[in-house]
Length: 56
Image 1: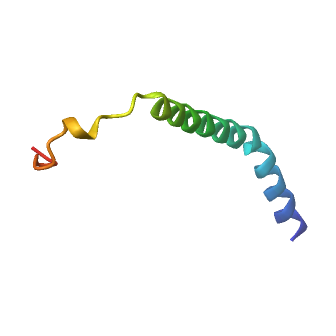
Image 2: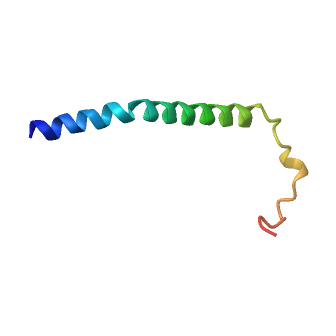
């Protein structure tokens, strides 16, 4: 039982840096996409045809 706990702790410690790096990268990409979406100019709904099909 103690050996299993030791192996589990070792595995967690081994992958801790990789997990932290991937989480940080995901957060960075998410924040970047959100900032890009918010910085885009608003679309003018009056210039769009409401009768136009959504998919061509």
